[in-house]
Length: 107
Image (cartoon, rainbow, N blue to C red; front, side):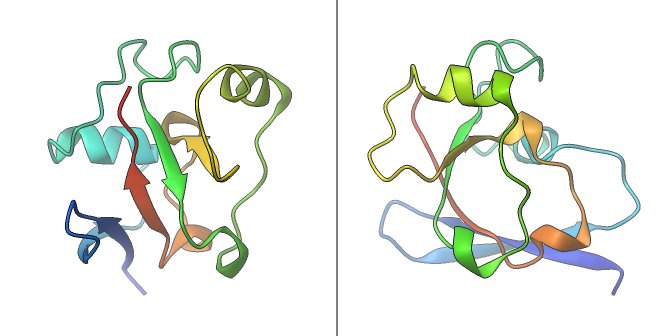
């Protein structure tokens, strides 16, 4: 496998796939920002602003590592009604997130 697929939910609740090559040292935030997909990422990936928040819609179906204490502290201060929100700056592009389904949250 030379790439992973990220499924991004659109406003009409359908998904569009985004293929991302493996072997790049980027975060999910950097990929979303590079594709102009509505991620502000004001702090540039320092996990201090929360403007790169996404909701993981299939958290139990992928092998996504849990949030660390710093990320959890920030997430607890942000609205997330499903409990499945993460900071995209803290998720690295890797085979473990292949097939991830997400909704980009408004900052």
